[in-house]
Amino acid sequence: MLIVEIQKRLSHFELDVKFSVGNEIVVLFGPSGSGKTTILNCIAGISKPAAGIIRLNDTILFENKKVFVPIQKRNIGYVFQDYALFPHMTVWKNIAYGMQNESFVKNLMKELRIEHLRDKYPSEISGGEKQRVAIARAIATEPAALLLDEPFSALDNQTRVKGHEELLRIHKLWRIPIILVTHHLEEAKKLGNRILYLHEGKICDSYSELIDSLTL
Image (tube, rainbow, N blue to C red; front, side):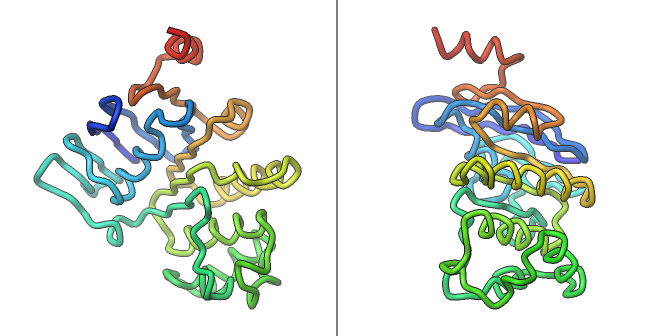
């Protein structure tokens, strides 16, 4: 279980959210600049909230000014929007960078159908393949939670659909809290067990409330 209760002052508004994620896919949905990526960065330890608490299972990752666990010790996988693969490393070395168990990683690559890319470099593979490599690298650390920041935004429609199928299959096999950021409503409905509608750092009660907020 991932518990998030955080406040942080951003340039144009105050981020103030409270939610929890079980072994499910929760989607953060909203327009650009509504605080979605900042929430992921706070959970991952890239950014520090001003106040609140973040707890993953029995471990407190952040609590006001008392606790701040560094990013490398949080046991959280993160797939960035641009995938952030190391360009000078092969696919295998990218995935193996933080792996815990080699046989697990080899099975994961087979599951994601990327084992044939093992000796290629990021510049030599397609966008959809980069996305699967990035997901494999995040899961290779055997994280207790997984964060994905618009991982399908740069893909064409056909590849995006395949990416959706991959994510749903991975979650079925790897039952951990997953938070997915998107601003595509149909994608949110397809992938999310729950959708949190976000506007200017606050969670709206419904999609209708979000639309009302945008038209004020």
